[in-house]
Length: 138
Image 1: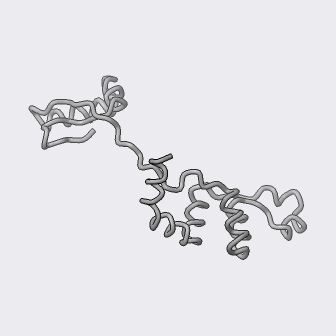
Image 2: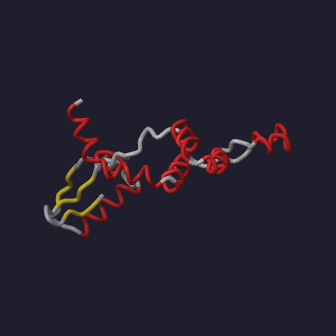
């Protein structure tokens, strides 16, 4: 819920409105508080803000591995470590226990990859408009 002073409304999404419909719920109490603080303001149902689509949606582990293999094999050990994939040395040393490694979340691995290989991010930023034009034609 948000106070929209320009329109003199208390803006809320449909989901927030449904939650506020339950008397004595936290959302209901919040709405009543806002209405008391802002007499004369109407409640308005607004669309939920859209999430910004990531330019790198679809960046797969397979693509990252292939890129690392082609451009800088020295980074593969770190990539595999983040993914929880044991090295050959660890497999020999620990056997089956090496399969129980902790792995990082996809978002963390993606962030590491884009920070490590900055040229991918730069290429995308430099060619963003061209790619959008190609997609419009297709």
